[in-house]
Image (cartoon, rainbow, N blue to C red; front, side, top):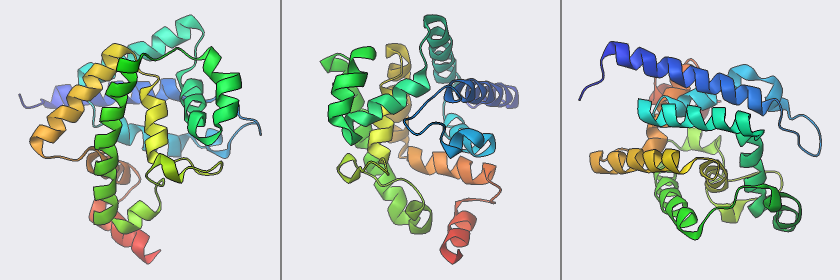
Length: 214
């Protein structure tokens, strides 16, 4: 069923509420070197995160909003947990020793479900990079095999983020992915399309041209 204007506005408002909630949690993330520069750039954070959440249906947004609320109530920080999980690739020994014992355990079935989603999204991201090379050049490297201490890949970032979702949120996210596959659409394309518009470009082609010239 086609989304009404009222439903679209409500979905956009919920997405903005989620970004604001994430920003609050992001302010509490502490790395070894103290605050990261991106923690002092709320405008960029909003553009990047809102670009993602505007691709989500309302039931998925509602579920993730509940995850954030539940994390607050339990004294957890999903943004801290996301970055901690990413370190399983970038600093595996430290992750196993210092971080993994403090993170909610993921069952083998849960990990397999996440890996199926990740495999699909890496293909989508690679297709986007091929179609928009200038924009792709400014994005994360694609695969975990390319991770370094200084640069974390799209694959590793996504794995860290999916690991923070509740089972219900992950199931709804998988439903979104499956719906896009059935429609022949690409989630990376949709996400970056929203992101560049929020950043002030007319569309993806205009953003690609500007980045190619720059």
